[in-house]
Length: 65
Ligand SMILES: [Zn+2]
Image (cartoon, rainbow, N blue to C red):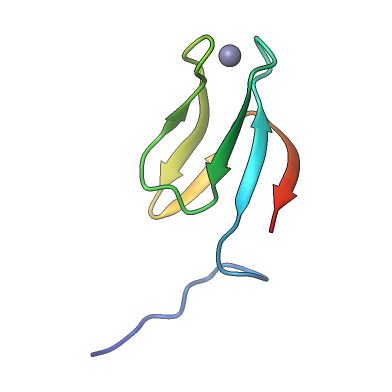
């Protein structure tokens, strides 16, 4: 079985602590989330899934390795 190399720089995947710009609720988001991640407080989208990678739309507070 062929395995395509993933064009992700540095480490493969990690968890990010993302802060909602609207209500300051913090949420842990997986960098390879396959689904959009919404804020628990206000429902705003904090991370959008794009082909197996999540685009962070909120403020990334820190990386949790
Ligand atoms: Zn929010």
